[in-house]
Image (cartoon, rainbow over all chains, first blue to last red; front, side, top):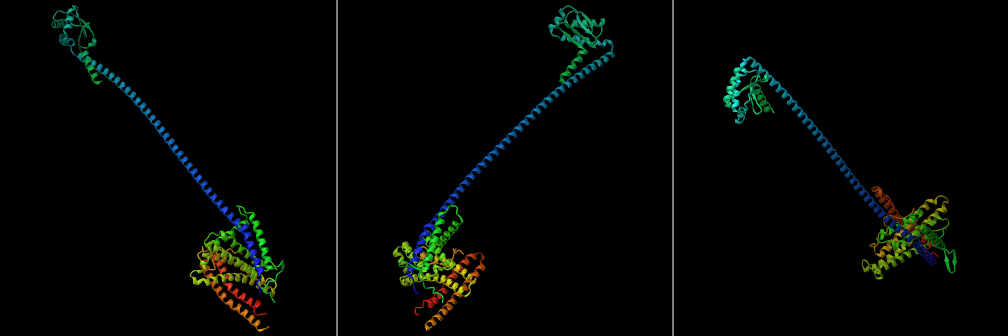
Length: 246
Length: 236
Length: 81
């Protein structure tokens, strides 16, 4: 066996040359390109992370905007609701006021109607009373229409204040006495006697007729007036009733 | 009589230098691999082509293997280990070309490869630990082990040579014997086995070189078992 | 053909034959263990078979050593002149 040292040396050189070539042209560029690609991938990843970050921020902004929008809408809704409620309240108030006014007016009308009715009733009552009184008086003797009242007239004249009495006496003119019928002589005499007692001097009586008195006697001058009749009594009663009603 | 696999006849002489067939074949391998690498690396781009992706896969696998064995940055060893693997693989697979014997079927080529590995082991070990530090590794675990360690260094280099030589040469030899017995089709399974053996042997050679260098550099924490597991990079 | 050549041929055959026994048994055990492991963990079949191939190559190396010895004895016998 023979070990060929030349072949051994040449093969060593061959392998060393291949080692140099490959490390220069294969392994270094490959490692460099792998490193470059890794760097690129890292950059891409960080870029993607940044893009995602910005997208996230955008989304947050959109969410905030949407929230604001919904808040504004809720506010607008609330305002509109309030507005509507206020308007409704105003309408209700107005309607209530109108109804109140109507009711007031109705009450006034009712009161007026009641008043008118009361007046009519009073009217009727007074007429009825007058009729009743007239019928009663008609049943009595004729003298009762005057005679019973002479005493009352005299008392009423006596109750007059002094000045009026003096005035009545000072005139010298006959005192006008109104009666429901023509006075008889005797009645005039009684009257004159009674008045003389009350006034303290001689007077004359001038008779006047007014059937409306029904019964009784009245004196009416420019300054004094003495009412002493059934009509006057009825009127007084009626007035008292009316004032009590009102 | 079959030609002796141990004998070499020079084809021609360049001056006084005899040039044999394995040298020629190895030179052709160097030229074609170098030209291919040059052409491929010129078109490297960030967006890889199919060829570039394959090359990057190979480089990444070599890196992974070195990292797995040495637990260190693979950059200083990548070119050496990768080149050894590629050369052995290409040399083993030249048996496919008719009339060409693989250069690794000759003892001289394997010895040259082992010689480079031993030199790299010593050089890288000295560079990593210093001369005293590297020599001190022979006295581990005690000074009594120095002769055994020296013998181990020599024998493992020789076993590296003989392993590769025996495997490839036996493949060539068996194929030759079968071819002399039955001419057609019969050697095909044996040739396929030859390819597999060649790839596995290239891988084993590269891994053992890595283990030796790693043990010398000392970052891997001692010599590993001779059958490393993990991802192989045979390409069959 | 002298005695040395006869002894060399016998020694070569004996070397290959005996040298094949150990690796054959070892490879059988290795393959059996790998089959067992693959049966337990089919998902690790890829890694296991790769490691198996490498291990078989390492085991085969011892047989190759005896083959080399046989070839040395046959073709590079220092005693044959």
